[in-house]
Image 1 (tube, rainbow, N blue to C red):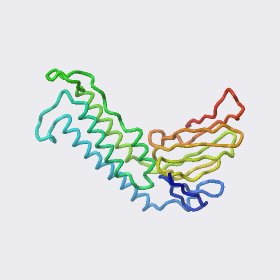
Image 2 (image 1 turned 30 degrees about the vertical axis):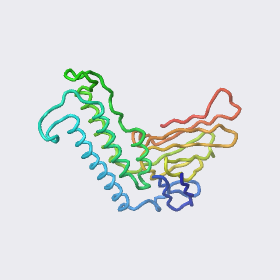
Image 3 (image 1 turned 90 degrees about the vertical axis):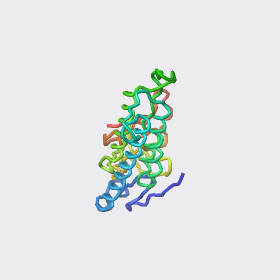
Length: 242
C-alpha cells in the first residue's frame, strides 16, 4: 500500500480522497477543484457506467434470450453459471475502467458490494439440471442495472464530518490501494470522492475504532465515534453514521 503525506492546506489526492483543509482540517473553498475538473470526472464516470450497462445487456441477451441474442427466443430456466458470467463480466469491466486515483474508493465499492448472482431455485423441467427461474434472473439483472446507476450518480464528491468523544483523535481514512492523509478530530473533510473507505480512529489511552464508511448508499454527513478507555472492560470504541 502506498502512502501519501498531507501538506496542509494544499490539495491532496490519496486513494480517491481529495481533502482540502487548513491546519485544523476545515475545508477551504479557495483550494477546491475547479468546475472543469469536476465536470470532466463526472463525465468519465458516467461514460464508464454507460459502457458497463452495454456489457450487462450483452450478458442479459446471452443468459435470458431476446432480440440481442440473435432471435426472439425467451429462456424460462436459466443456467446459474450464465448469470454468474453476466455479473462477473460487468464487474470486471468496471474494475478495469476505474483506474484513476479519484475513483479508487468507488473501485473498492464495486469489488465488495457488487450484486451477487442467485443460486438455483428450481430444476429445469426438460434437462433436470439446477436452474434459476426467469423472474429471479430478471430481478438480478435489474439489481445490477440499479447498481450501475448509483455509480454514475451525483454528487461526485461529498463532505464528511468526523466527530469523536473525546476529541483530538487521529482519523486514518484509506482505500485498498492507497493510504490517505491523516486528520485530527473533530474535523470536516470536503470533496471526498464517493465510494467505500476503511477507517481507523486512534487516541492515546483509548481503544481504537475500526470500520467502513459507505459514501454511495449512505448520504448521512456525520461519522460519530465514542471512544472507550483501554481499561474499560465493558465497552468498546464504536462509530455510527448520522
